[in-house]
View: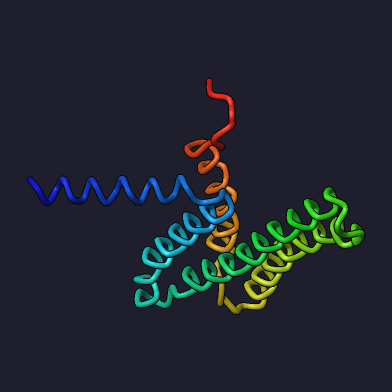
Length: 153
């Protein structure tokens, strides 16, 4: 019984730590947790009948999505600096939208071209699924961890 209470106490401190993080760090931590869970799920397929491309597709989508998440954070910091009047380099901000979109397209086109040439190194579905992780985490994180000054329903 004492052991169960200790687990519950540790769980509460983990949730409190998540609540105290900035939204960017919280989304990154939860996203990395989901990515780690995906790696654990797809890893056994490496040994089953040559289905390694499920894991490699997940890893490719993970890397591209984490790069894009970093670009989103960098872009938001640039917008904040411009709003404060500290920087005048606003040309690069709209270009970053196209860069992020281009990274997503390049990943899927690369997987598609390799598949059409008979080289199944990556799976397009796990690559696309890994693209959706950070978006889902940001949405759910905003739902369950609202900002302190946000109005409640």
